[in-house]
Length: 240
Length: 240
Image (cartoon, rainbow over all chains, first blue to last red; front, side, top):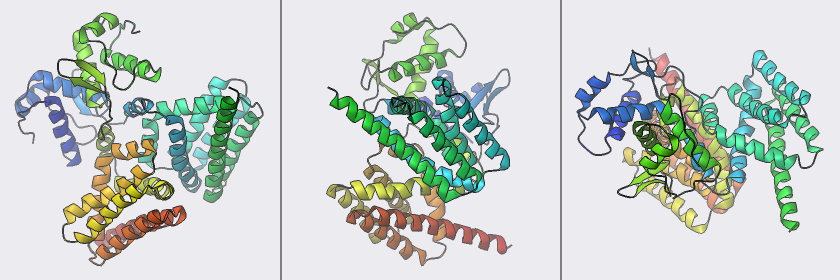
């Protein structure tokens, strides 16, 4: 099963072996890992290295420690297991433009997939988000949350868990992106109604089960957001 | 700068504070972190918790430890910092279908973006991959690598680093997906020439700078891959 390790960066090798067992299908969701003591014996590394590896695996959300029972491969994935990517990307320049571009790629297709797959229940869920957006015009903090919820609900309706997981993995980035873009767009107050209409339009196309219309409207929406930001940026520059 | 923490899951709180400093722009690429001792004092937690947090941050590739110098926010991001997602997704059922669907979304757009942005140097790089694919028909292990390299080179040419980073973050999944899909497709030997022609066609559209043709050809390629897999699956089932 496990084989001994003799080298530096020991915890990485421990993680590698656990990962390989998952790839080979030997460890599955909910399975119990060997105890710390068993891992020390089987892998012939220090208890400290095993602990280091286990806590790292907890942090990335692959395993959970149940009190008095030991360590288990998680049954249900956390939504935030990938947040490190967000943090890393914040270290890059030019991120707002690239985030919006990336969102456009994912979300234009997602809207079409959602229009194909949405159940009545999911349509109602999305309708409620749109209704909340309409009824809370004055609470921008809430609107940021609702705006994000709208887009994440669509990603969920696609039924593609990799897509949804990846979008969740960059949740921090999307937060910052939505907050930033809305603040730029709403410098022109008439845009609030336009944004609401755009969200209603996307919702209507999904509810109607019209994939082409849904993706077309999502594209118009995100292109409009992009256009507003470029305009605001130009205004800002020309005011110097 | 840092403020004291008094609670359980201490290493997570340590990570949270470091992450926030990055979000706020107080820590940048290449910056040195306070020493372990300073962190113990500033955050008022045990040295063990600090170590646990630091090694987790190393594992996710956010910081690096330089011998005798201390810990630094990484200058250059690793390509594999996100591999945990791959491992997690392998625990899901139905992953091959969803991976291919996700790739189709990303790569159809990527092909168009690459056709818009490719420099002469990048076109030559992509051409070399296609040439290698043509000249190594018998070495399937090499072909798997080249096939992957072809798609990753296109993602890189898009110039969108978030897209490229995310594709790198699921590198294990893409490996498995390409290996799996090629093995299914090549059960019919005539498909090797078809695959080579498809890759040449995508390359030619990018080299010509024709975004529509490039995305159309990428879509045909991935749709063909999908069709072959479904057919092989049906054959397998009907042979029982």
